[in-house]
Every structure is written in C-alpha cells, then in structure tokens.
Image (cartoon, rainbow, N blue to C red):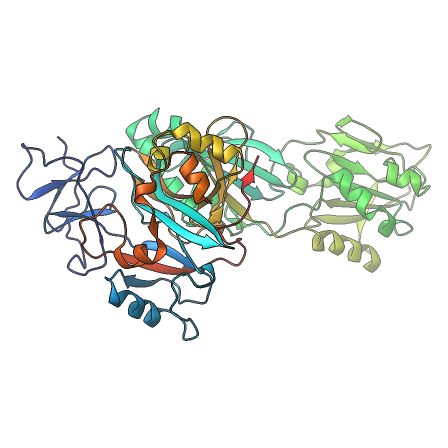
Length: 535
C-alpha cells in the first residue's frame, strides 16, 4: 500500500487542541507497528507517529488518529477572531467559556441561541455508515431543533466565478488554465460580467493526475479567498480573488459597465440632450447611436447621418461593430472612429457635435465635423464631461465573486439518516435548512441536493482537500427535532449544545479536542431558524 505521509513532524502535536478520531477497522497486519491507518477518506494514509496524512488534516499522536484543525463555532456576540479554546470536561466547561467570552455574557451556553457549530474542522463520516460527528440539539422560540454537522468530501463540485469587467477575457467555451493545466472553461457573458466554470468531476478525476491535483489546489485556494493566476486560451491572463478586483493582463480592473451601449444611450439621453448632436456608445455586444435610438426619437432629436459598421438590429442598436478585445467597450478598438463608415451628406452638416464613449466612461472623445464632414477631435465641453463622469459614477466597482457549487446528494446523507432519500425529500419540502460554514446555501431545484454558496459569506479557510482528489467543504442541516425523527435520523446521537461544548465530537475516545470561535457574519441570517433558500 502506498504510504501517504509528510516527512516533517507536526508542530505542537503535544498540545491538547486536537480532535481524536476512531478507526473504522483494526490496523493493517502488514503495516509497520509505529503507523496507524487514517480512514477519513478513501486514500487510507498510513501515518507514523508525529506526522500528518497527505491532506495535512489528520495526524498520528501517540498511536491515536487526531484531527489537527479545530472545529469552527459561530457566536452572535462579539468574540476575538481566530480564538482557539480547548474542549474541557464537566465543571471546567463553563469556566473556560466565561474566560473566552465577553464580560457581559452570562455563561449560559444556550443563551439567546448564541452558538452554532459549523462543519469546518468537524471531520467526515467516511466510510459513510457513521452518524455525523456533531448532531446538536438546541431550542429556538420554544421549538426543539437539531443541526447535523459534518465535512463533506466533494468530487462532484465546481466553482462558478463571476468577473465584473467590461474587458474581454476570452471566447466562450475556451479552456481556462492554471499552471498550464486545464481547470475549467469560459461560460456566458452576463450583464457587465464574464462567467467562468472551474473544477468539476471531469477535471478532478477524468484527466491526468497532474490535472486533478492542480484543479483541486486551484479550487481550494479560490474557495479560501486566495488569489489565483489563470490564463484563458485565445484570451487574457487574469488574477482572480474572491472579493477583490480582477487583474486582467497585468492591469487591475476598476469598473463594470453601467449597461450595454443601447442602455447607456437610453439612461443618459435626456442629460445629453441639447449638449450633443450625436452620441455613439461603443460596445462589444450592442453599440448604441442616440439619434436613431428610440430615446433620441422621443426627444425629437434630428438624425445625424452617421453610418456605422456592423449589423444593424433595431433602430439605434448595432451588433458586431468590432472584434472582442481589451479596448473601447470590450472591443479591439483603439480608435473609435474606425467603426464609422461615413456620413450621409444629405443629413450631416459641418459643426455637428459627436460624443463617442465606452459603456464605462473610461474611454471618451469629443469630435466636431469639419467642412468635409470629417470628425476632428476637440476639447470636450465641461457639461458633456460631467455626463461622461456620471456614466463612470454609475458603474459599480469591478469585482470577482466565487461561488462553491457542490452535489451533496450522495453518501454524506448517511451521516444524517439511514434512509438518505428522506433527507432529500425533506429539503425539497422546505423542512430542512442547509448551510455551509453557517452561510446560507441556495439549493437548486430538481433531483439530488445541489447547493451553492458565496465563499465570501463563509468563515476563512473553510475548504480543504483530500488527494483522491476532492474538495472538503463544511455542510450543516438544521431542522425541527420532530422532522428529524420523522426522516429516520440518528436520534441516538443527538446531543445538547452544552455537551458538545464540553466533550467535542461523537467520533472520539474521550481525549481533548479544540474549537475556534468566530463572530457570526453580519451579512448572514442566523443559521438556526432561517427559512431555506430553495430553488
């Protein structure tokens, strides 16, 4: 059997802040006496004393398998971030809690439903038949509640990345690469944003070992809010980080568009009326021409006679005026006049005032037609410049958003109930609220349990990996106790929050474990009692 161990020792292994886990079966007879087998995932690492397994999440401490990372717990009241507190026994529990908590806290473990146990650091149910590590009872508005807490091993998962920018990133369906390996592809362009799909089971398991390894490392880094450099075939080189502006070809993006060229014309038509004779808003998708547009017609503006390249759609709206690129309005244009084929001499006149701008206002130029109906660039009037600045003001900051999308309809349900389909049905019937690290998760309609969550709403370092390869992500199922009993849940493993805080996870031999307190994110509803986000 291949040995999956680190060669370095585990720092701090002698400290009592680790979670001790059971072994599902006796040590392999052919395994060295100083090793133990980790059964937290299918890799089954054989770990020597003082070392960790391949995932860096489990270690061998004095012959016992221990969870290195603390369990993350949320509290509504203020608490120092990243505070680690050991689990203790009986009488010492409340004392330790009082030391860790703000002075005004009463010490009541269930006071105002302040504490929520997340799946971060909770451990898995692999090889799947075991109840979840934490099945926690609580009481909300005189209703008995249960939260089933675990870490899921997700092979069927991906990241949906939304990049707010007017810049062209690459052709739809193009491969997205990290360190040379294909880790996803470009999907559709949305209003002011480009979407990427990264990961997925085919990249994790269907390609080479290197492709799977790079894919899972990319997903873990992005899920944990770290920056990742990506390249798009036939397109751009980008640096993406959740909650930060993307960097495209070495330049940090500033704005996403206020709208397409047609929308920009319509929004600002009245503000430009009387100050211009024509406006062309250059856009890779829909270029707008004010005097032809319905907005200009309603304002009774005279036609300018401008003739544009591209395919005319409806009045004042043109498709395909240029190729996609890093220039004006997401096109390859550096000279906006190149899309003008000419002027109708029967309509155009010398002195006609022309504003050309992009959909973000980052590019703008002012022209006046000379005696030969040739546009000559001139200094932009102050009142027109103010409208261009207003266009920029209405552009939201460029941002990268990372959503984790995972299929939870498989074996992890066995940690909740012996009849997994009843959990699926209960979620679809809105009887169960699903969260990931305490953050609200959207449950997709249709079969299975497909959840999606914004990683920015999750605690830091919520994601891990196993070298199968797969992503490890927290997941929690909260419901009324009566509904948990009805779906055939592991009621014998239900424990009070107070007992959990004193003793740690169910899957241990009584040795100390640790928890890390995190303040509940103000943008999130409290996980216990909130309505499910269903499709």
